[in-house]
Image (cartoon, rainbow, N blue to C red):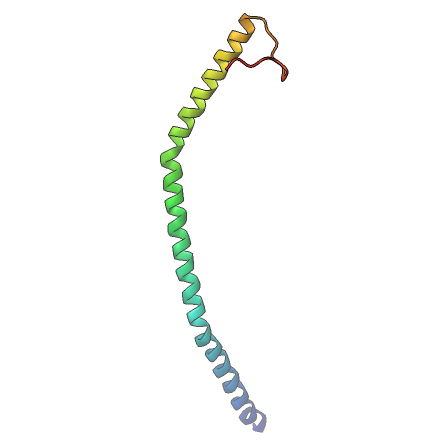
Length: 90
């Protein structure tokens, strides 16, 4: 019985310390949550931008592919081999 009486203050002190540490940590947790919210907003803006710009990027890549295909056909028609040492025309 005496052991129980002596252990009670130690347990209460431990509980108070744990509660105190939790209270001290609350501002840091709150700050971290605010940072996470801001990061989520930035990621949402970035994703929205990417979704809006992706069709334009695809369109431009398809145009470049068409130009390269046309150049390749012209070179094959002329039966010319292009090397790094070939003269430049434009």
